[in-house]
Length: 217
Ligand code: ADP
Ligand code: ZN
Image (tube, rainbow, N blue to C red; front, side):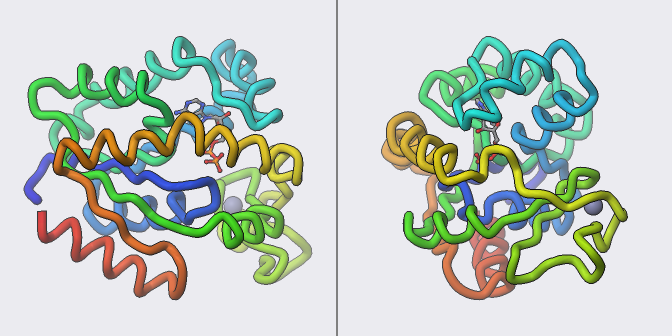
């Protein structure tokens, strides 16, 4: 693939989209755009946009398209995205968002959709043991905590469980994934820019496969 890279990372919550897309973006030298991170940052800063989003996020529901679409469009229109490209993580999440994204990127559209595939059993386990840095968003787990007392190894902020990583919210998020997001698999498959990569197993091996896929396109 040549610049501008225009990549979407698709997958269930807990598939590893966040960590893999952030490493991919850093490796390619392009922007990592996570709508979840954008919304959490806005909620922390207490902006109007953040306040609107907070309630939905805590319950594990999708933020309305009317709230998210403008923010994504604004971000994608900036120069770094237009010239070098981006990895989108957590967007699109439903058909209306996918169609809106196509419009934003006309005439060329998305070049590659990587579907990071992980079984529901595995993501249930990953999400319930996940812990997240409130400062920089780095993820840990109860099995691999930070070196000292739940403060982030990278930035020193507090590492906590996300409000939407409780069993009820996880169940709701996975149900919404099946209903709203999974149909995007067939939709992008039909466009011919779609590759599935298994998200189970060794992190570095998965990353190598993702990178090889990008280079093949
Ligand atoms: P996860 O995929 O693990 O649920 P994210 O960090 O991607 O976590 O998203 C967290 C929350 O932010 C979602 O549950 C939802 O409320 C909101 N959100 C993120 N991206 C979108 C989107 N594209 N459309 C609507 N809501 C979104
Ligand atoms: Zn941190």
